[in-house]
Length: 283
Image (cartoon, rainbow, N blue to C red; front, side, top):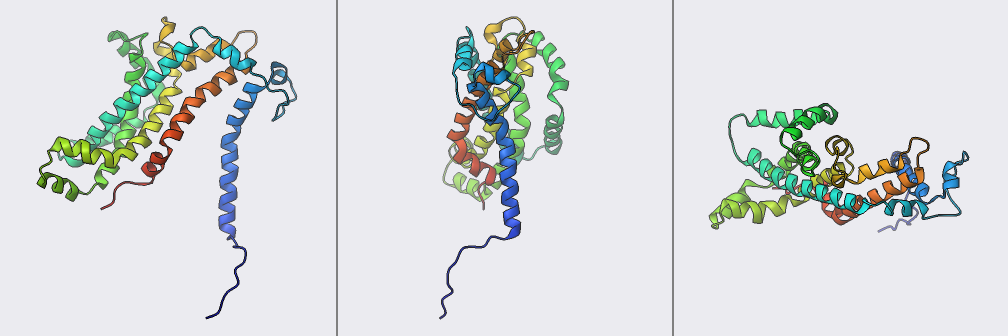
């Protein structure tokens, strides 16, 4: 038996090119985030300087102090958290039940219903803002958090149902039959067996729901008209937009503070998210 001397592993040119491309794309995506955080820590003189530099030698917390000194900042933060958590929980549960229904049950117009989910996903949110405004007005929901929660649940459901449908379909029907033979009811199978198996998919859909709801500005600006106590964090940034000169330090500091809960949420669910995006149970 001949021994082949081990040496440095030579990577193929195609793989090197793919890794270099991925690195360039990652840097391009991360640079705006880096510039936002950098600008939040820059003193006012450096932000307004025409000689922009990708670093600072004298970091300052003045911009963050102006953000946290806002009277209603804490209330805005709590409102955003209530809206985002409500949308994530409600849309996840409804999408799970709906995905189970369209996957496990046969009924008329099932295909039509699935196509309608796709069509609803294609309609721009901006095109529905005015009709939604009148709908919320007629329901008496303007200037309430409900006017933000209900539309976001509606817009989160089509994507969540389509994604969870694949997870539910991947669960073997033999597993369901075995559970019924062992005496499990449909409700028990649904929550104690099926729900844990599709939970990674629920996590994946909840990330998209949380991000879109947390960063929403259009609905908050359109539906919260007079009662500023019901505003959310994106609306708090408007304080730093002034007619004479914008406070870019405050804008960047506020945007940085808004990004932190999204990053924390992502870190908490990242393991489930990877498995959720990768696939589901195989027969």
